[in-house]
Amino acid sequence: MLSPSGWPEVPCARCEARVAGLAWGALCPACAADRARRASRLASRISLPATLLVGLYVLWRVPPIPLARIYGVIAVLVTYIVVRKVVHRVALELLPR
Ligand SMILES: [Zn+2]
View (tube, protein in one colour):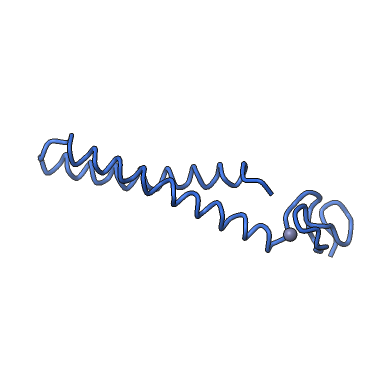
């Protein structure tokens, strides 16, 4: 199978293993999975403390009204999801090869 650049096999940008169907400068599936795993680990290490901080803020600052508590719980969940996604995406772009 030819790569998008027309070459039969293109070396991985990180490990230099020749893989068919790879674009120039792209990572092989093993290196891409390793990079995604590192990004996911970093994302969870950053999003969990951020979620804890928002949870503490909601616990201390939101009045004990049921509807306000529900919105507080929603804010905590949204914080975890958004921070995790943003950190994962940024880490994929900025982590060294
Ligand atoms: Zn590789």
